[in-house]
Image 1 (cartoon, rainbow, N blue to C red):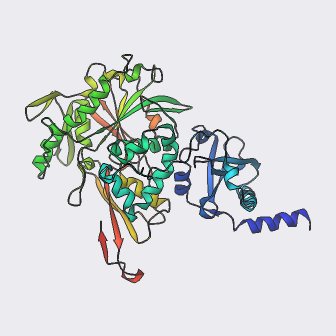
Image 2 (image 1 turned 90 degrees about the horizontal axis):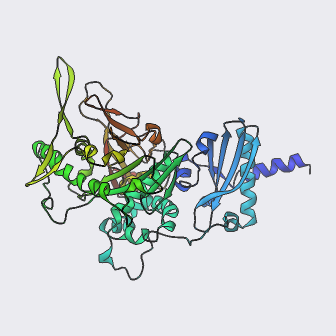
Length: 491
């Protein structure tokens, strides 16, 4: 048989060994794989996987030479998908895809996939954040962790967290223990931030402090992550639980600025054993430094959403020491800014305007998101094709309304299980820029986030077209057979 005929037969046989997959699925499995420079050098055009996702394949176009390459990725000893084979200089996408599938077929037929993925630089063993040590009793587990680990409908989030943790947990010996117990919220927030930074095409290095060093060919900055936690004592211990519009306004005007102020000022003033602030440490010197904060001060329940869905308005009031009111004059929306001197609650007072505090000029920006939750990880998993059988996933929320006279967000609702549904880690990221920053954080560093800044006494905002202000997910368990799916229970 001639070589050309043999090659054609191999190409035909190889079609059964690799199938195209959604970019969302490939991204979950390779979240830590790409280098930031890749975004400038090539354009990914198709994504592939073998049965059971044992091997992954990628086709990309070289942006310089305008030719194509294929890459085969396999799990290393820790379980992370990394490049194990690469070939370049294909004249077109179709030819590269044929050769990729032949390569994947040959690797599978050899039966040495595990050996094929070994990189030789692994130093840790595979790690599972849901592997509970025998000496860790049930009463020590965080209630959200137990829900995540035990409920069948949370399978998408478990899959995503397992994949992302392979990149973070081996470098942090305390990650798993804290994720399973009292540190659940903080660790989930860090996992979310890492995924978002990676989606911003940044190389992300975990540090002891600050938490992240983010780099790309265009930028270099550090980030310290923190959360707003429940108050166990003091005047903020008794939560207001606002029910009316007036109560909610008072809650956002004074209680929540104090809640945000606690962790932010703590990070502003924190020093290490050598007396250095975060921005004075070697990794941060002479570059932008940001604090990333999330609100976990009150848990959601079946009757009420967590306040995190709407507390971002209190954050910017506290950061800039200003609040706004709005009115209409002859059908024209007029927004007025009002300076805030302080916030007071139950006799306690704090100064407003975090960015005006002494030394705050060293904080380039405050990064916020209300999406570092189990629901976000569920939706990202469903969008990648990891939805749990017998469950429906629906998203309801608000996005920016482009209408010039809009004073509230535009409502939306979507079926996350729709094959055409797409979601990104960065959709809910908001960046509040410090007008006094010694080293400003360029907007391009987090391109695709919503950016806020003060100019001429007014808060200005720039949002991408797919930004989301807030949302919640409805997880539905279907009852009965396929013909009776309308009978369902929301949980």
